[in-house]
Length: 375
Ligand SMILES: Cc1cc2nc3c(=O)[nH]c(=O)nc-3n(C[C@H](O)[C@H](O)[C@H](O)COP(=O)(O)OP(=O)(O)OC[C@H]3O[C@@H](n4cnc5c(N)ncnc54)[C@H](O)[C@@H]3O)c2cc1C
Image 1 (cartoon, rainbow, N blue to C red):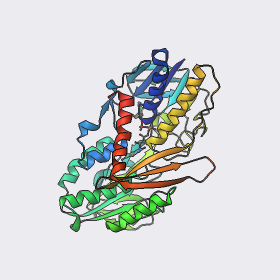
Image 2: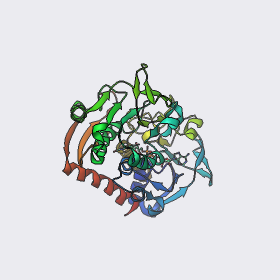
Image 3: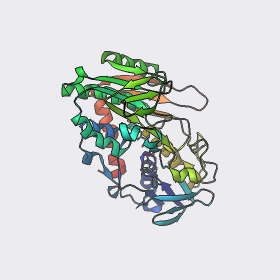
Image 4: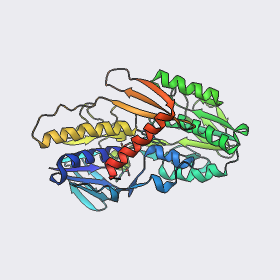
């Protein structure tokens, strides 16, 4: 059985690692990605705020050599889900089982003024470029804002505002600066009231202005103002935006999406096409777009494929559970555990923030690097 996995992000790496660990070179897996290296989402903030050099957070796929898994660096150009066939710049690939794990693409151009008069911190290139912009910034009005929903890692803008406060203080320019955070939700982390309270308290203590239930619709670069959905204008000297998210063009063109994302069975991650699965940010499965959820979904699909290869009936089902680490700045991290179950209100609690949990988060990343890249 040939398994073709599109996308070597959180989902694709976890899925292929499990298949290789289970079957070694008895399995026939092709893993396709257009990039030559993986970067964790949270590493973008580490580079942007100068905690890590860019070279330290790139994990080259050439290191992810696994028995039974052939990595092909190429762009996927078309997907025929019914035929389980994809066209790529390296030629066609036919699959017995196809897994789409192509994530969410970012479209900074969709927000008028963002490219010309602001910065985005969600792409690797955007976040890495901000390192120099921040180094040159001498204080002023900073806005961290979301431009549309859904967006990856809903806590990331809150973390960015807190890390900005720490950064500007360390630079000695916090007193002549203002930080505003514009978010589409009423509270920072809706499924966890305790985590939301802790964040709102931290914003109040650090003088971060909180603008809930709002998104920035456009930037007026000439007047240096960001315009919210209700017409409110916020003046800025430095604008850091979360750009509009969309499924990769190749996925939309395949006809697999409904309302922009691939619908899947929330328990099995099967799409409407037989033997085609979709996992992670590219789906509308009902969990937030975050690596931990993509990884959890990958584990379920991996187990279902393991059972199938062994000729057993699979009972593996997705439970919507995930752990998220929240940067509070000053080397303090909190841990939020959330469960999203179809048909039930999501729920979750918070532990920390503490230095011990900062070490926990570091180990979370390091353990994935060991498992996926063997280093
Ligand atoms: C600033 C920031 C902080 C974050 N922090 C966290 C965090 O702390 N915890 C957490 O769990 N999540 C975090 N995230 C979210 C996390 O990075 C994503 O949700 C996660 O990577 C999604 O996994 P995925 O496998 O669905 O997609 P991805 O990891 O995005 O992988 C998709 C892959 O598909 C490839 N691809 C796309 N189109 C094509 C094509 N046409 N041809 C070939 N290859 C293609 C891409 O190159 C990519 O490697 C953060 C994100 C950001 C931006």
